[in-house]
Image 1 (tube, rainbow, N blue to C red):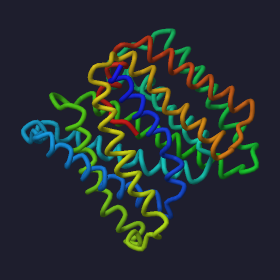
Image 2: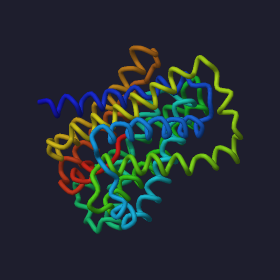
Image 3: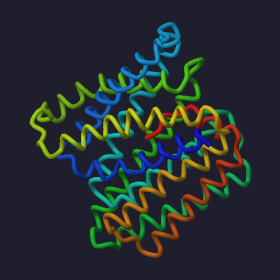
Length: 298
């Protein structure tokens, strides 16, 4: 029960990210840089208190995959934060949750898995759901901006799917060690990217944004990841797959109740088709459930 509560709390934390990003007056790449830096320092402190050492020999063995996964993590954050800034929290969350569908599509090539008839149907239903969300998004009052935000969400999903697949090839490292290395590497890679694209206006961040940056780094990254990995250690893969849906559901509830962002009936139908199809596909694939065990969360 303790493990379920820990994992559930991590999903609720991840589901609230969009709200805090909305109140940070920085570019998405700058937010990603600060989140990675603060989160990395937090996890480093936790690992020091746990007397947990970094297995540098294993880091060297997995160096290329860790580098590629770190690039995927940084890109994932940048596009996700852009999605939150351009469209509703619900649209961003649903388009981002297309990532499992991308994994299913790529699994025959990356993981040598066969696509069963059931999985092919799930992919088709998920695509139909996404079509409902995108098509109806273009008819909303925000119009083009909504479509741009959904596009960013889908790009974030591509990077997230890549991250999940890369993590499948990391050998003999646990989730906490892997995430710490990925956070640190992503942060280092984001420094020159931010410098050449945005300069260091990051130093002129408004005082009103600072509390939200700290919460994003410490709570949504540090504490969120800690609860995520602590909770999933004693959970079965299918339990993790099922409980993972608390994340997008939390985002949808916050969007509707707190921010009062409206979804049309067609969008809600699309969301139900998307989440329902990925739920069915994940619970039909133990290999995919095991893959969820190794992925870092948002």
